[in-house]
Each structure stands twice: as structure tokens, then as C-alpha cells.
Image 1 (cartoon, rainbow, N blue to C red):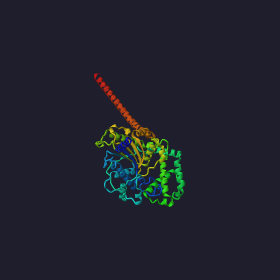
Image 2: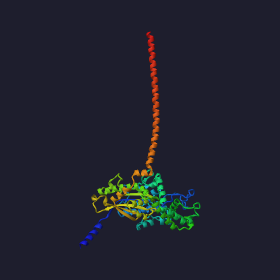
Image 3: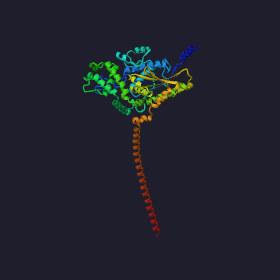
Length: 483
């Protein structure tokens, strides 16, 4: 009887106890885009010899992917949990984007799904594009119904206006992808990893073994395909396949496109896992996420502190320092860096074997939750938990205090990032140049000042001589008069 009563009490307690969302960070890759590089610059042909007018730019399919992801996030964070307000509240969401059109347009498209209104907008897609223009998460029946109602439109609605903060090239400590002056260190590590990790060499060899016989008639000036060619080729092939390009030249070779697509995804899987972040310390992954993790932890603490003391965010009229949600629109490199960094930090390097290349519109999410039945005033950081998701896949859950400590013990300081990238030396050089020019100006002014002083002294000396001569002349005249 006591045992049955205990079970009943436990069931009732579990039914009452419920996780409450406190803070959310979503970080996502832009949607489908054109390839980044031309193989034939003059004719604007990519590496699979398809024509694109705007390399690297978001397509209509990419817009749709993020619109649907916005609808899904509206379900998760507004309709089902009531975590966010029905309409956009600038105090609730802090939005970042890297300084690229494709990331800016992606987050704007997603916001149209998160906060829809009713104004027709968007590009037109064909049937083949419509089939493929989906994010990497599971879509509910309600979203699928709306997706069907989209018809051929990429975007049906116009969002409520929302401010997006750009992570610019001048911000040297945010995202490696946006720091051209630090990319030489990435290339340096790529070279080291390529020499020491056989994975990428084997992937390039596999490409030549499998596809050189098919492609030799198209690329007649290439004897063997090197890693840079394979990198650009796969980027173009994935973009072209996703966009539904005709791929006339590739079709003429008779190559199995589905097999080639699988190879290319596997190539990029290895590329970010081994070619870029292959060293034991996951150096570039740590560099990439350090500033982002600092931002995440800072705002997460603010939100949790507000929950503990019971402050109402709506009362902070001019204060945007305690958002409920951060959104970051960026690239596959940043999402890969999170995966590498977290595997390193939580001693879970075996998870690298299950690493997934972040396809277009992939989203990772950190959700901070707590037991809603507890009195907030009796809570501390150990009573809050962080759940990490890769698209819909739940990866791990950690106590907030444990998560913060391990992350802060591993991220880099701004000074270390400066030193690694050479920004410290650059600053010193800039200061040296300024000092040099100031010294020149000071020297010129000093010379001018001395010249003026000398002229004044000479003039003063001449004036004294005139006075002396005048006095002598007067004395002589007076003497003559006495005589």
C-alpha cells in the first residue's frame, strides 16, 4: 500500500513538475545559395559549368527554407510554449547576422515566418525547387499545410520590422569567417592538417579514382583534381543539385549524381572535421566560437538572474540587455566550430565520429530550462539546465553552472585572439606609424619655432645697437655744445 502510494505521489509530482524555458540561443546556417566561385570567370560558369549571375547569394529556395524554419520556431517558442510574445518585442529577441547578403536575407526570411503578416512577397519557384526547399528539421502537419499553400511563392508574407545587428569585418573577435586578416591562420592550419591527417588525402584520391574518368572530357586541362578543385566542385554541385539546375555537362558524363551528392556531403563532413578543425586542440573551432560563447553566457546569465529575482522584462523600457532569445545567422563554419568545440570541452571526442555537415538552413539551439515548480528565489545556477539540439536531434543536457565553467575554462580571451591572429602586432604597427608621423610634425614645428626665436633674437639685437648708437650720438652733440 505504501509502495503504491509512493508511486502515485511520484506520478503526481512528475505531472506537476514541468520545464520552463528561460533563455534560447538559435544559431543557423543561411539557406540555399549560389556557388561562391566561378571556374570560368568570363562566362560566369561555376565548377560544374552552370551559369549563375550572383555568386554566393541566397536564392528563392534559401528564402523559403528559412521562412519554414521561422514557422517551425514560431510553433516551438510561441504557439506551444508561449515563451515569446505573439508579436515582435524588441526587448525579447537579440538578432545577429554576419555581414553577408545571404545571412542577412536568411534571418529576414526566417523572421517573416516567426512573425508573419499578410503581404505577398518573394520569388517564384518551379516544381523541382519546391520539393527541395525544406530546412533540415521535421515539419508538423500544420506547417506542411502552409507549405502546400505557398504554391510557387518563396515567401508569402512580409515580416514585422525587426532590427538585425551585423557582425562586421571591423569586429575582429566574433566570427573567423568574417575576419579576412585572420584567414591566413586558418589556411596555415589547413596545410598542417592536410599533411598530417590522411582523411582528406584519401577523399581527394577517392574523387580521382571514382570520377576522373567521367570528368576528364569536360576538364581537359586538368590531369589530377587537387583538393581546392574538389572543394569548389562539390560546393557547386550541391548548390546546383539543390537549386534544380539542369547540369547538362554533368549529365553527359553518365556519372551517378546521387552517389556524387553523397560523396560531396561526406567530403565537406571531413573538410570541417579534419581539414579545418583536425588538430588535437581544435584550435580554429575554439577561435571561432570564443566570442560567441561569451555573448551567449553573458545574456544567458542576465536572463536567469532576472528569473531568479523575478524582474519583468517589459518594465525595462530602454534596456535591451536581458533578451529571452538570441538569433545568430551565419555559416556552416560557425556551426561546425560549435560541434568541434563542445566535443572537446565535454571530453566527448567520440562524438566527432557522428559529426554531421551542416547543410543549408541547419539550426543548432541551446535551450535554458528550469523546474517551474521550484521557487525562483531559492534557485541558483545549478538549478538551471542547458539542452543542446542539432536541428531536431537532442545532443546533451548539462547543468548551467557546469556548462559555464567548462566553456569559460576553454574559450580564448580577446588578448589571446589578438595574439593568434596578429592583431596585437597590427595595432603596434599602426601606433608606430602614428607616432612616426607625429614626430615628423613635432620636428617641423620645433624647427619653425626655433627659426622664429632666432629671427626675434636677431631683430632684438639690431634694435639694441640702434639705441646704443642713438645714445652715443646724442652724447657727442651735447659734449660739443658744452665746449
